[in-house]
Length: 574
Image (cartoon, rainbow, N blue to C red):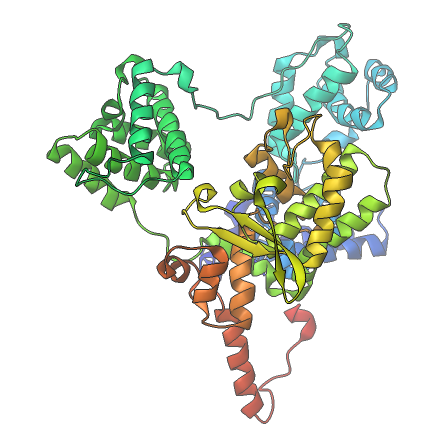
């Protein structure tokens, strides 16, 4: 079950009047709803109670205000409560219907507005049913505002966005508006008869390209990188060479930090070298930028910038001792190591306390491939097999997604023999790995069979006419964009299984599954996840097997008891 963001003690201290109408009020009204069958009323009550179980809250502490309920739905982990994808879909439908019929909220009032004749004629001409459905809801809103189709503009779109923010229960309002604008421009405004709509941007982009920064800064950065890659072996202060992956990461951090300073109205021409970038006053200004982007909450990026600033200040820029000491103070203040998994990641892993959730994830690659084989050979079908392969590899080779997306059969396939059989090893050299550790994973025969099927049948459809050995090709013969690739994996897992997890959670799951069967064997977990130090493994995963240990302990006590204190109510427990 998901961990409630509010404990029972704090819930009891909140006056329910401050929450407005709640699910408790809704439950009281459902039995008296007119024009609804007894079965439908029962389904609504069941849906409301299931929602409260998933949220781990009592009905009187769940407001039905759209903004609050939408956030709860986004953070909910139904799979952790044993709720299937189809059941969760029914829960949302029944709760939404109950709210609409109760009159406690106007969240769905838009569906009751009749279309004007002008809007009806326009919608009838939209050939695509999907786009027609997207435009119809907007048309009802405009009809209610008495706005004709030819009078549409971005002001009306902004009002519609505000309406969705206040009323839409499940979907992201910004995404709804973006998709609407796309459908409108494609289906209605393409011939110029109606005005085009400009959707709001979701981008928070601030990063500049290196070409937008002073050439002298670029030269200094490159010289610093070269000194790290090829240190002078005769220099007493020399350190071992940095890996290309480390250099790539530092380059990324430097460009983003310079961009952050420019966003804080610092003249770009004042950033002529790395010393200008990481002087204490500039470092503080950049930190303020990243904290502000994170609503002034602790930001995981900040320690990386400070650590990089210390390296540059000591080894390259040779800043004065008092400035280095000032950066060290910042390091002590912001470098507060995370002990164990974050709360969010613990919740993600906790979903798999239910064996059914584990089964859904582990069997997902097979289901996706079986489904693809029944369909025509298209780009969309090939994408499903690609996602099946990505998930299969993450299950049996829990590598970081940056390494996953760059896999190439010409560089990373190595055949060996084990007990007389040829075995394919996935080998990633240390130079390509974040912590400079060689990775090697022997693959199971069924995984190799999936690799062969994908590379011979489906990968050529996805290579954008740039044949290569890349497992996950993007455009122009390069690997797919890493953030987009991660989002694709996350989306298909949630859509097919109801589980909310990103690719990195596979590493946490690998540790949990192994420690549950082999308690205390952190050394092997360290090897599987390729941590350099056992301290890293202990810091993140010590105690991860605690739930399984407590269950074994409970059973030890129960075996010594004569009988239960009370017979548990199975319905209440579920």
